[in-house]
Amino acid sequence: MRQSQLFTKTRKDVPSDETSKNAQLLIRAGFIHKEMAGVYSYLPLGLKVIKRIENIIREEMNAIGGIEMKTSAFQSREVWEKTNRWDDNIVDNWFKTKLKSGGEVGLSFTNEEAYSNILRQYISSYKDLPIYPYDFKEIFRNEVRSKSGIMRGREFYWKALYSFSRNESEHLDFYNKAKEAYKNIFNRAGIGDKTYITYASGGTFSKFSHEFQTLCDAGEDIIYISKEDEGKGLKMDENRVVVNKEIYNEDLKKDLGLVGDFVERKAIEVGNIFTLGTKFSEPFDLKYKDEKGKDNVVLMGSYGIGLGRLMGTIVEILSDDKGIVWPKEVSPFSVHLVRLGDKPETLAFADKLYTDLQNKGIEALYDDRDLRAGEKFADSDLIGIPVRFVVSDKTIAEDKVEVKMRTENDSKLISVGEALKNF
Image 1 (tube, rainbow, N blue to C red):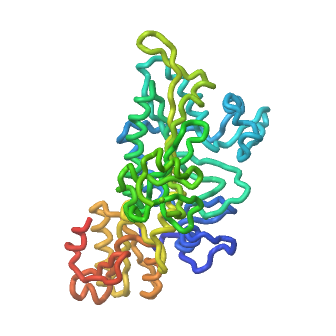
Image 2: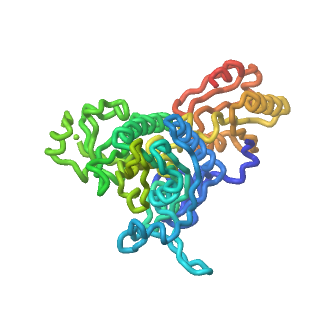
Image 3: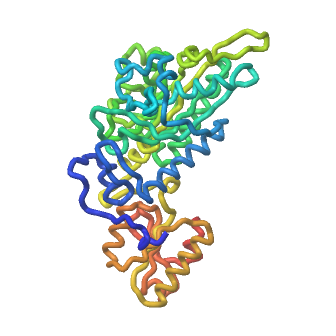
């Protein structure tokens, strides 16, 4: 993409009421536009990042047997009344509206009932199970006070997978596969070394659930982690799993056999996995007949990731005083090609390099704008693409290109062929 054709522009100012670093940087760099508190539009650069995160998650979910589908954002009152979660006294963050033809609908705030209602039409025999459907979807929550930028909004984009299993062993087998898939996701997203699997409350579903918590001073959650485990992230041993403040105590520590002395740290929840049991299958009479013809209630699990929350977390922990520092797999582009100078030979060299990148399937943002070098470099640092190629009158005199990594201070002058070998 030529930057001259990108209608968004970087800016120095941000909305006065925007206090979170992730939103400030994403707004300044032209990734998102703030519509109102807790509601953001994703501009071209922001959409490319969300789509890259989406593709990482899709690949990992498909690898463990996930089947992608798409559920409706509109939810009928009758479906949710089966679990008593239509009642505002039970769930107080619905967005609801009345239909002109009569009746009332809500906008999805989660997806358990929606999937149970759909799957009951397709499950009758043990041969129909297990099933692992998921979708990417806009979710709506009428939060009293939205904060933390795109990490906690009234409208947000998430992935939710629900497992439907015949028995506990089958459920746990998939649950553990999902745990490994989540590790892969957060490693690929560049935050694995700061992300920990934590024991959390299972609520009314089970004794425990698991949350994936990323260490960050902007986090809303508190976790306990031993000093010797800091920096290990998702590579730590299972017997060193950290726990959330809400359930931490010495008895629990002994019960789980956890070792080391569990330091209080702030963290951001970037994903969670739950055992749901039969809480959402029983109200829908979601059963299957086993080999002997006996009816059994389907066991369910829930596996969620907020894509905007993950994107915001990456920005919170991987930015510096110059701007965003995108990991390779989630960056909107692989290369930021910056052209300096307007001599015909410089333009021709830069244009050819841009074409060569495209022909090799390497996505590049080509800064072909008529601006000073300082402005271009400042924009490049703010946008945060991992690799920068600079073509100037000086570099083409040596038939080379200046290459600088976003995470490094120094650049190097190398041939185009050598530069392209990195991809």
